[in-house]
Length: 305
Image 1: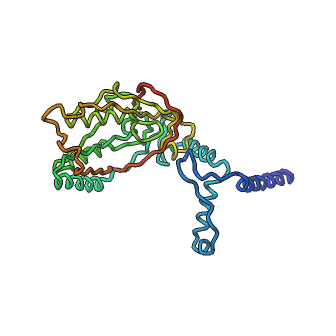
Image 2: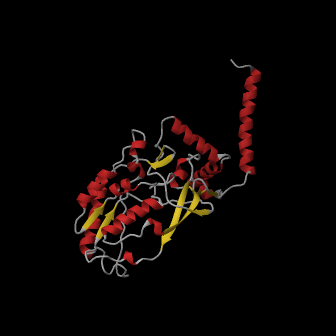
Image 3: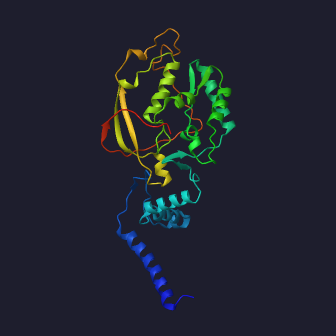
């Protein structure tokens, strides 16, 4: 049994911690945006009778307390690394492996895929336009051998379902083989999107499938912006993951974008304003935000995964 003086000291220490947190809540400035989490933080709700009676004030105030607790980012990071160390890698929707973040594997909904394939097929039949469906493999699928054993990605199954479900002149472009043969860093370490290198390889595959010619990589004036943090970094809480480099650039206008042969699939009126373009997301799409530092010019190099 603890000595009475020790028990009293522990009680005083506990009460002192509570008081310190309260003082810090009042004294520290309140940010309205979290750079790391890429989101706006909750605002202090207005106290009204209607809000109290409906329960909205209590829930909004709890959200404000959670967003502005002193040391919140450090606590979020501590929890994220504790989850990682305790074997719960990927439960929050983000997998960590080899210094890189991946979207956790998603469930394949065959019925939803079939419905979307029918929408695309009907669009192709009713418009008579050349219709292509290009599915980009996830970084987890492309680098599955580096991930934990429980991470099972079904991108290949999805591609086969789409291939079999399209009709009416619509067809699938599945770039897995081209990406695996390309080399270089094709996906960001902190985001699920393709890098500029990966986007170039897929664009090249599609442009060449139309019978057109893609400018060579050496024709691009590439500018690199350091310090890119993607959406998976923001939601993971794993703040020690190193940032990416974000590339941007353009190639000079080239006649080679025109069809070099009479067998090209690209429609002659592909620049006409009468052409409607339609995108269908399978299974979903999302966006990323960035924070970058001064840029530099360089040549693309890197690793695939």
